[in-house]
Length: 257
Image (cartoon, rainbow, N blue to C red; front, top):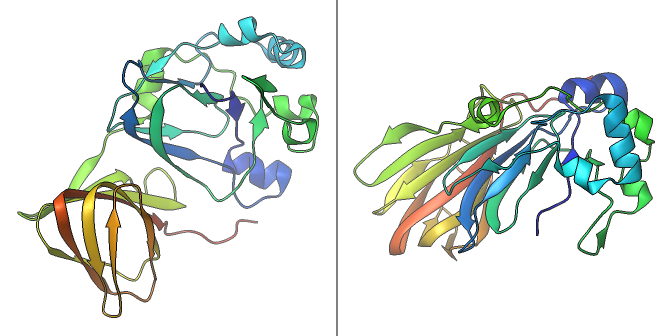
């Protein structure tokens, strides 16, 4: 099913109004699409309502009017998308993705029920009311091409060797909270870790990961963590090529006040 339309505050808004250290910038990495689907997301208003119009639409749960505010933004396997705070969004049907976000759960939910899944009142507006929530939205009208230009990230190769390729999916120019890279590995290789706590997901293949003190076998769909104390580790493919997506803390994870 398509997920509920929602929005998250920007970090600036979270700092200034909510007195929270982080908003909720998100990034999507598209891993797969169910057969027969035309994958899409909703992102930003293509046919922007006024604040008063949007208040009525949300309050009355006018689904037809809400749907008319959006066009489908097409996505494809391998795409990386940036979801800024303030932009209403929803994930379309049939998509498998990794979702990486700022460390908060701040969310405004615009649809209260979809296909039997009901959002209770306390979870709709962060415990506040609709009038408060309306100030979080970006009411700019963005064309589909505007969104493609603004929010689709172009991955860049940062290291290429005969045995592996390291591609930056999300870099420090977008957010100070996290970075995301993709390692494609064909032969046994030693990876320099640089003492950064890492969360990873095996997106393709099967491998053995070995540090100075431990070895673990992982396969597609498994997640793992590498401790800050690790200086380097070895990845050995066991069945075909291996793709790992890794998330690491950004340079500035200090609490903002």
